[in-house]
Length: 142
Image (cartoon, rainbow, N blue to C red; front, side, top):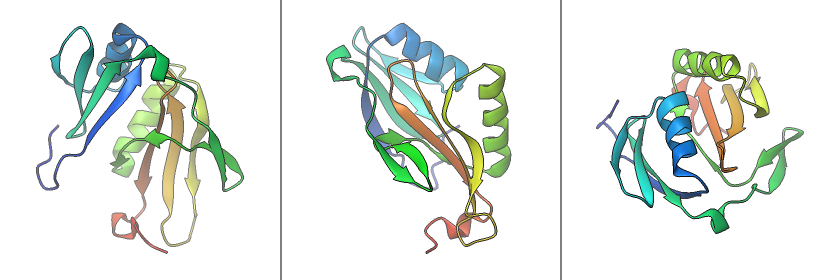
């Protein structure tokens, strides 16, 4: 899963239950597990190191902001996937009956930066966005 063509990103985030985080990130999302302790777990999220830290007091539902008429969680993270990977993940999440914050859909259809996106939360309320671009060269298109 690791892609060394770009430097791996590191993100540490709070969870309220490590077993639930392991099932969600390792099981549902398919992230290989790295090192762990009784207080944290490393996961490989498409070549990026994310670390779930047991910190129940730090977990909370993220505030939202209006984007395209939708309430987008302000604090969120995720990965830009290929369209095929994004579609497969969306189907896997639907099959697992994951509750979406924002259902999978296409933004900016027919415009620069056309992209597929979806938002959902992990068991601790951390918001995730996974997206895919029709043309990845337009990742930062205006």
